[in-house]
Length: 304
Image (cartoon, rainbow, N blue to C red):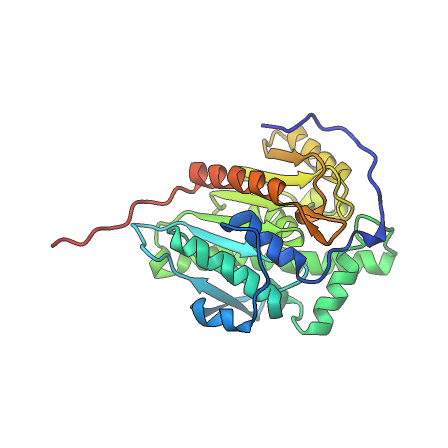
């Protein structure tokens, strides 16, 4: 289903569209979690138990925070969550871990993949990614910047594809269906990596992410895909998602596109003010999509 036919709209290309640090991550919790996020401190870590895992991609170790399904059924589905450009450090990490905890309680096995490990995950690395990524669709990049962006995006895409294969290789996930869920930059990485997996994921959910134009030729056949965007997005203008969707449709692919009127990037108006009603609608739509393509089996009841 399409929110409207692909067409070009004028979009304000304003460098001020960048979200305040941490907003990406808490928006992710609101979109997949159960409540609009509230500030949290480091003490929250104590109630978010996880298991540290690791796999290798292109010779580099990639960290994974795994949250096991609380009441696993046979072949509990796996959500591979790809963070936005704000990364996994500090308060951002707390937000994504809250999201993982909530979905583990619903019966999903959740893997938070630190895909920046493929290119460098130090604070100064993340700052440079943020400066580059937030300008990709709102200001022209020079040749050097475009080359750098392509190198980074290729490495992140390869890592996400490897994460799908790694998740399937784990004994506890034998026979499980796997979905990629990405936010902003992570959504673009999810789209680009889905067709590169040796065995494609069961579904992809992309919140506000668009694959840069010069990298779309590498897009391959997508599984069932939900793309959520806003027509007031000032960081990734809605023109770009219509172009991407039209390009996919022209190649006989059928992503489901939901564009929300008045929604800014990640449902944060002007990068600072949450849009909770729009978040709620998007959350319900996502829950319906995952229930259709990645249903959670009933838990196994032990015999008396």
